Length: 287
Image (cartoon, rainbow, N blue to C red):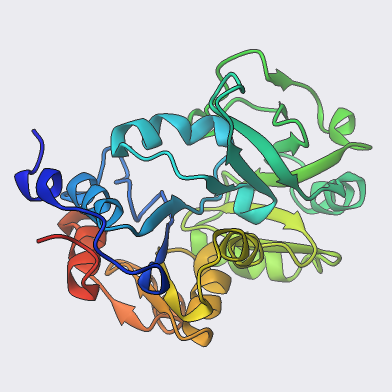
């Protein structure tokens, strides 16, 4: 059902008042069961109707993002995926409606060799520059349907230029895994540890904030007009980026304290509609 207020709203913000709103997906837009946070659809459509730019900044691969955009009714010009290693740009000629416009890669060999020494029984996945993925064990969270995902052993993952390496351990919890990873001595890469025993590795110096800065420049949005929302450790850099630029760094209510301290604003949890609440509170909706 559509919201009459959204249908009636016109693009009312002046160009200099436009905001760039970047939303994390898991734990921000999406609940644990992959359903949408309450009120998020109407809220983001309302913000767009006023003239603001609403986009996604996620650690997910592009192949796991498209269906969420459809549910949200969004088609922004630029979307940040793979924790900032890939920026997708809207292209009506591309099969998916988007093309890989900006891609950062690194050689996965040294990282895989090091981690394999510590986690020989871990679950490994690498994403190549063209979006195809290689993995050693099939996990539901990795959305490995389709022809662009192939099961290989870890040795076959080495020697490739990749946008990300993902490692999941069955033997650790989130906090213990973070401590375990710190002891590995990972260098020449950027990495973050998720809520569970999930390690996401990107090229050195690349994260959501570096990609969003590029998007901000492309969209010609003033630095102080950025709004980001997230809940995880891989959102910390973009939260700092927004806050230090004079923008809004919104942290979801269920976030760990170590993430929450990086925000300029705490909203409700994802289960209670934190995105919708924050957009209303900042004044970015037509309600």
